[in-house]
Length: 200
Length: 258
Figure 1: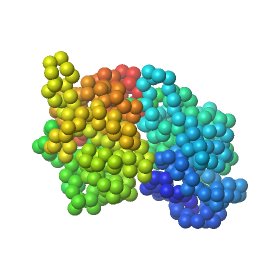
Figure 2: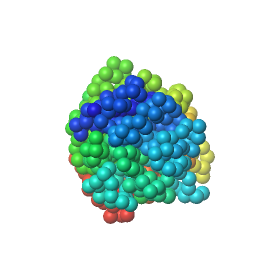
Figure 3: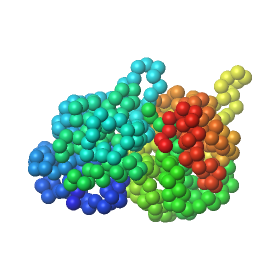
Figure 4: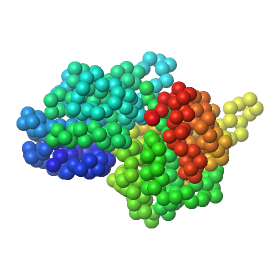
């Protein structure tokens, strides 16, 4: 069973529906202790980084312990940002720090007509092979909606460019994350979720 | 590169998709879930359900329609029409909507934009603006874009550009701008109005009203500086397919998801 962590950041209906469509059994744990029996953990999230403060020290400890024990962990959107060290959106909220770096607001030169938030379908390039992106062709488009983005790091497995390159997906051992919404990205998104589910 | 989005709008009344001209004379266009399935196969980027005759009694029926459409697609789904309160937004989101679109309720209670943005994030809050060109206040002055409430039935004192700016400041994540003059006419989008609003705000603007040919979409992306274009009639009655439209735009060098 997959633990879908609900820390009050937006709605989980879409993620739940997508997981059901690919045959995953899902439950929402009410206490951190339940993470110990998960086959995989998903930290979703839409909205503000500050909402990740709902992931209290107990949740952080339980998540780290599960990951150390080999349980696959997947972050989506704000869930990806939480796996970095933090975000300029809410400097007082600490990320888990699995991936190095801090998320920052998209900024563009004056007169550049790119809008923030970055909303819509944008294409991916893959700097190296990964479990998460297996079978996904370079140039595949996925659905983004966010104002803050994580830097490209050694663990970046998919890059998107919006004024500047940023991490669209990261993977390190049994921890993976996507900035876009796989549950809203048509067949390609479902393929990535299926790829991750196979590691559970 | 960020693609220009093609959005199909399902105007729903009593569980059926309907479509009129200039917001009037509705005719039936099919089952929402069936249309959503077809558009999904054709490569639509997003779907909007507008419950055009939403009432309190219709809330249950609306949840059913949302769930039926959400079941067909793994794409962003927006619901508008009867969102008058936080409870309406919550019901729509729980039924499977990713975003809600506020129109009359936002005009009446602008604070609702902020409340919903705080609760669900700005990305979940679209402010829909229905506007109509007015007479210029004096010769050689620009014509105002008058905002209407209640599906184009009630005039307001607001101007579309100012209202778009205010909605953005209050936390809206996108603007859905409909030209009442062009709605259902297939005479083309109001590119001038779209460009004026798109330039006034730093959030995406979805152009709506008037799509009749593929060229109209190219115009609204280039001259109208729209981030997305929404259409209904042109797709519903099998006149044009989404995939052909995207191929056309792509040959012109306009970025789309194919």
